Image (tube, rainbow, N blue to C red):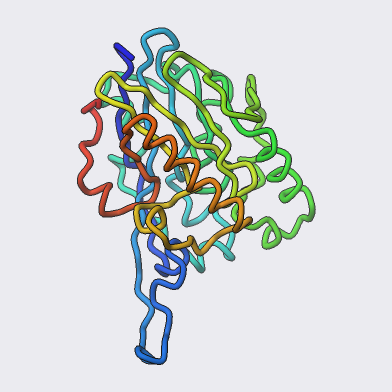
Length: 267
């Protein structure tokens, strides 16, 4: 679509056991009985979209810069977040001459803590798109108990943060010309992906439904709510990739991320 562009924003990174994102990555076998675990550093990414009619849009909200202190212990014992001052979202937006108030819409792939960190920054100024099932399940998780260790990867204050307007997605939906949201359950039951028909070519953002190329080509993620749904979502993305001859932008693929041009460059 003419005038539709997207940019890549780095809002930090997290280091964790590689098996969390790439299941069986360092599994012991009888041929390799001394296999050792390894650390893997994943990027925290927010995509910014410039739409000729809808204006400025963000895909996901990344991790908050104080995650190391704000996340509960059951999460910080697994993943170590790291940030620089330059990577604060407001500083990244400034590279494009933007302020948070310039963002009109936020598209949420799902509501895990590394995708909701900056949500409160936009709660009064932007409209949000999210899966209805994701909101229901995430809300149930954080309201189930005052014991945060039972909330999984959800942060209560972020999941329950009131926003000006939520738009719920239940099926493949073109929300603006050239931008289609599609349910991709598996990682969570309400995970969403996005098809961007950019002026430079079609990109598919699968969200955490497919962490990286290592999952797309056969491996399974370490965090998986529904195995059969995950495999169906991979098949769905592959079908759309073939249909549009699309490039896939993965959310937690360090190798791919290192090759991206970051904002202020816009694809």
